[in-house]
Amino acid sequence: MSQVSIVIPMFNEARHIARTLASAQRAAARAGLACELIVVDNGSTDDGPAIARQFGAQVLSLPGLTIGALRNRGAALGNGHWLAFLDADIEVPAQWLAQLLRLHGEQRADVFALDCDTPAAAPWYARAWQRRTLRTGAVQHRAQWLPTPNLLMPRSWFARVGGFNEQLTTGEDKDLTWRLTQAGARLLAVRDPVALHWGFEGRWGEWLGKELWRQGSHLHLLRNHGRSLRLLRFPLLSLGAWAVDVAALLALSYGQVPLALLLLLVGALPALGLSARQSLRHRDLLFTLQLWGLHWVRLRLAGAALVLSLLNRPSRRPARG
Image (cartoon, rainbow, N blue to C red; front, side, top):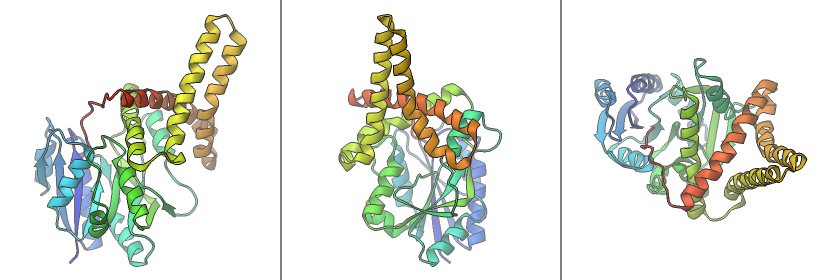
């Protein structure tokens, strides 16, 4: 029987880890795979590690490491031919592994991930932000990079690119899967069924803090992959938004109200463009407006995160899945 090693980094996820592990075990059983659960704990102070052991998981306690390092240590401990990565707040559907292994057997791709959705209990901003990542149209989409809330590949591909970059505090999933693409791996995103993300941001301040942390990856990715237009596009857009905002404030301070309003309108257009690109296929005006506001905030957070990175002020947020 083939074996899958499922690596789950964790920090204070006692609320969610049981659901994650139970769903992973169900998916492995349905696929006819021996399941090796490896939880890599980054110094939790709650009952998460004890709960994980109740499900038969191997628990490594490695406080203070980056998310990439946690995942690499878990992968090194595992023995499975298949290597899967889950976040500790993800519930995978029962057919997760069976469906992706079937696609691999049909030579559709080498590396796989399911789209993620948010439970209905999440607040509007968490639902809208997750919904923007959901694909429409075909069930299967070729991709150049995939996120790691759920990720599956043969171990040989992981070894070929040397695993995750342990210097990155965030963005390690994009970095790994881009390197897999460059090495010749075929990446496939599957939109049906979806995995559920239970670790949604329950408070507005939590969303702001998490998004600021996420945006800290841009400078690291540029250093590792060069100044490609694809990587430069969003950081430059965020700095441009800050520049327009400053110009609007200066115009307002000199009594140039019409000019200030015009500049504020110009500064809102990039967020509108991002919102339209991600929401029009859903044909939902309210969703478009929600995303417009969230992208406006995200652009300002990205600019702040880029400046903090240039000042060498890393995030203090513990690495977690």
